[in-house]
Amino acid sequence: MSKNVLLIKIIDTSSSMSSMIEEAKSSLKADLKVALKEQEGDSVSYQLRLVSFNSDVRFISDGPLDEKCLADIDLIQTSGMTALRDAVGKSIEEIDAGFDGVYVDIFTDGNENASQKFTPLAIQEMVKYRTTQGWEFKYFGANQDAVLAGSEIGINVNNCINYNVHNYNETMQSSTVMRGMYVQSLHSRDNSN
Image (tube, rainbow, N blue to C red):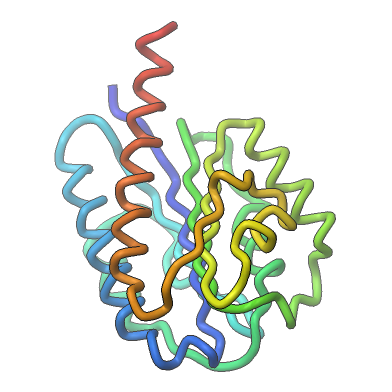
């Protein structure tokens, strides 16, 4: 039976990402091409919420994963500071309950320095609650202690990964593998019931 999965990709586009944004966009496209290929079978159907953040939070794509989403990635540009908490909060606060699973990737190369709406405690509570609902959160951090930064917003330390800003592609490939494992786990839950 096909699983309806919401992919939420939260991508740092602050000024510090300028030197790697093209690699980040290329890697993101490669990841989503794999997801598109996965949809060709009958095991999964993806919705995509692609969010970029700097001083502001911007929804780049929000709907069915299709070829248009790949073109939307070209709209991503860098500027500003790092409103990480606002990006996470706005991305997950209003999600319909009609998904079999929700998989959230957060990619950032810097520490929070610009959020206006969400406090650390509010994000931590939102993430922890959604984790109890079966959501999977991954935090990929560069130029920081990703375990500390991710756990401060409620993400399990085992899901916090340090990455090298000069190899974004390899990091995104790890995300692709982890997403596949998550979708497999959704099917395994059905088979064990």
